[in-house]
Each structure stands twice: as C-alpha cells, then as structure tokens.
Length: 431
Image 1: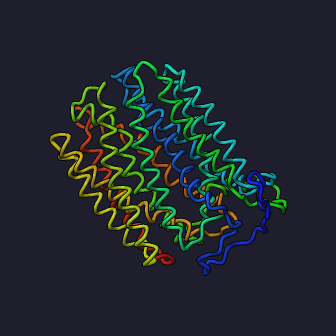
Image 2: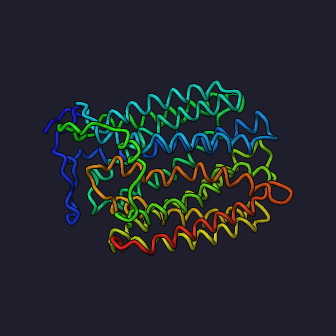
Image 3: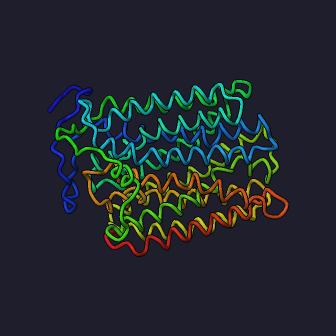
C-alpha cells in the first residue's frame, strides 16, 4: 500500500459483495478522505450552484431586465443539454481509465481545469451568446469532476455509512447554495467578473484537495474496445432488466423537477412577485436560501441517521414529498416575504429529508459496482434532465394569464413532487 498521497492504489476490479455492508471495490482511505470528499461535493455545488442560481440571473437582470426570464431559460436549457450528454459519457470513460493516477483522479483534476476555463469566459461575457458558451464550458468541466466524485460513493463508501455520508454531502451542498448567495450579495455590483471567478476558484481548490488525498483504484486490465454501440448504451439501462433502478431514477427525476422549478426562478420571484428592488434582491435571495438551508441540513442529518439505523429509505421519500407540498402551498399563497420564508423553510426541510436517502437509495439499486461511473452518470441525468425540462416548461407556465405566473409554476412543482413520491413505491430491493 502506497503512503504517497499522489499515488493511486492498485486494486482488482471485482464487484463488492452486496450482502457485506463494509465491502467496497476501493482501498481503505485516509482519515482525511471523508471530510475532503464532502468538501469536494460542497465545492462543485458552490461553483455551479452559485453561478447558475445567482450569478447568471443577476447578470441578466442587470444586462436586460425585460428579457431576463427568457434569456435565463435559454442558458439553462442549453447548459442542461450539454451536461446531460457529457456526464454519463465521462462517467463511463472514467470507469475505463487506465492512468497511473487512477480511474477518478484524472477526471477530478481535468474537470476543474476545464471548468475554470468556462468561468473565465463568463467573467468577460456581456451577451446571451457568450454567457451561454461560458456556462456550457463550465458545466462540462465541473460535470466531469462531479461524475468522478459521485462514482466514489460506490467505489469507496461502505453501505453501512453510505446514507450518513450522502446526507452530509447533501447538507454540504445545501450549505454551498446559501453561502454562494451570501458571497454574491457582498461582491460589488460593478465587478461582475467576481460573481463568476470567486465561486469557481473555491470549487476548484476544494476538488484539488480531494485529488491529492484520494487513494484511487488503478485499472490494470485493458477494457474492451470502445464502440459506437457502447456510446449509445452509456445513456441507457433496460428498465425491464433493472426495474428498481428505473423507479429510483424516475423518483429522483420528478423530485428534482419540483425543487428546480423553485430554485431556478427564485431571484425573479423575489423581484417580480414580492416586489423587492433588483439592487436588494440578492440579499433577500441569500436570506431565503439561508432559511431553506437550515431546514435542509437539520432534516438531512436527522433522517440520514434514522435511515441507516432502520434500513428504511422509501417512507422518508414519501414523507418528503408530502411535506414539500405543504411548503410550496404556503409559498404560493404568501402575501409578503415573511410568509414566503415560512413556506420555503418547510420546503427546505422536505428536501433535506429526501437528500438524506436519495444518493444512498440510488447506489443500492445500481446494477454493478464495476461500472459505477457509467451507471452513476445515468443517475446524474435524473438531476440534470430537469435543468433542461423545467426551463422549457416554465416558459408557457409563466406566460399564463398576464405573465409572470409563478402560481402555475409552483403548482407544477407540487405535482412533480407527488409523482416522484409515487415512483418510489414499486422499488423492491430497498425498504
């Protein structure tokens, strides 16, 4: 076993025993691995979440307030297509990587370098076309790192602690969203480049930390020749052969559509529905995300512990969807910011409960740990597809009536969440 943190550990590619809660394909890691794994997860969310959820909307609000909604939908939609294409593909290529650095580490390092190239483009962008280009590059780069980091859940995290680790990572992701909004709120309005460079650099540095300490699996057996048929199969798992995976994927898809419907247009809701001036809206957005995140983190940690102790995942998903329905209903009917914050706090708590079991549930219905990168790339699509579908659906929903119809958008979010809860019920392999 190498003591050099830059040297990966060779390991035969054998699937872990599904009945052994301590069995994983990877090697025993240093004590610093778990905190740095969570920090890398935090970093990716901090970079992409802050840029997509705060920096780009704010840039459009300042560039052309009249077309900000349509412009944001275009960028989110195109970026969604890019990340949908690259994430499973990069995950599969990561599974096949034979670098002396290991299977995942080259993609973590290369991903943040490419992501920062996209951030550099965003920092100088002053039009829809250039912002779209920069966001696509950013998505592709950090998406590659994200695919590798997600694969580590199956490579390196034992099942007996997987829900708790996933809950901690989910809580870190929630914290990243609020801290990103807070950071953006204090950055000067006349230094637009900083809205992109600061979160990008923080995300990159944290992922480099994981790259340094990770004892990665080194693939020694040469994979079969990569064919076009393999490329197509990268985006597909037969739902008849793997029904539990299909239902878990569908559950995650619709629950994510519910939350993305709220988060993507949150800044515009604050400006248009609550009547907050755009110069003050970033601060209110940060407050809103703070309220959301407190409930999210508390419930993620509580239900992560409950889930690992009881071995039950499905009832928590159903509870999450019902609680989210209540919160979204309050948010829709809110006459002012105070009531809206109550609704958002409940939605955050519901999302925290879901996050506590979401990733653990998905890893427990994977067809194989050997192809974890590819399969978790398909899992990631259930998070990324909503980033394409929601902006497309939002355009006609917001246009209902006199326009800016956030009630219709939030009702759609409720429906999405309830469909997601129903989808978890047919799963047999997980309680």
